[in-house]
Length: 457
Image 1 (spheres, rainbow, N blue to C red):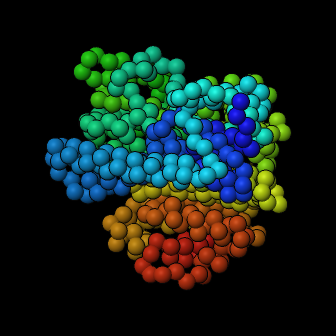
Image 2 (cartoon, rainbow, N blue to C red):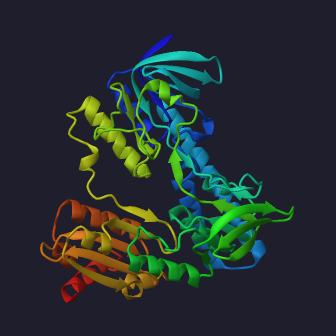
């Protein structure tokens, strides 16, 4: 039986960074990854990086227009470009760990025997590995609802649709959440006729109502069909096409499609781990239960990234690595409570980004609130970029002047949200953002006018 200082299950963002930190401190580390196609984790292989590559290509294609044949040619070229980028990242990620003298990368699946003993079914010889510390970083997987026909050959998740080389003329997306909206926008840009169905009647219910309305109007204005308050009851296939069967009140919808995307969210991936044998507790959402230092309920087991069932972002997984490294190699001062405001973005066209509370959340939390709105068309840089649509909104505490939330549906919004996070974490009043000097012409200088409008509210 092999003994190492640390076993990391999952070669993703958190696992990769932690492996290097532990190995550089002199520890012997074993990293277990079940698929050679997932070195680096979900983000560079089937999520953030390949989808953003395709989003960029789709916007270029949309600007060029052209015949369906030309759009198909550009779409196929975009898939090729995406594949080349992913392969390059995968090779670099692998060698970044495998070439380290204190790290062994094992291709195989791990399952707990006890909290510090793992059985590994590798591609060579099965073995047992004992470790002083075990880190679960197995990520998440797409949710597949119990719908008859969901295993059909034209039905995809976000991870598999990006490998389809024929641009679907008609795409039906089941789920109007963040993944669904990003894919709806992207495939609309490529030239697909997109229909989105959602069981809830409120569009983007977690977002500020003004921004959600602006996003909806933008999507519908581009020809994307939104069917809300609809429950999918079956996905049929008549040989030439898929048909999404859905029910709204007493009305039955039959939506033909060349491809169906199921975008019903993601859940922690614990399949095959025999997690019960480790003794760790799980949350009600099915993630590994951890404390503020990401320790599980078993002393020698930690969990990082999506497998915790919390915020499923690559940068949160990376921050999880920093928290664990602080706990093991530093002074333990970094915890989940020290993250500050967490921004996020949805790469529609234009993109939507948010940090902090919505207006409704701020009022429910007891704040006296001031808000301000700025149309994207009033930002010079947006017009230069030929992306004048959108809406910017700020939420401020009327008594203290502290920024409570910033909501941005406009060009470059993912970059702007990072500036807003820094201001919120530093607890500077909105007047600092209002009076700051920004380069011109940029999207950042929109903050001058946005926060100036607070004074008039």
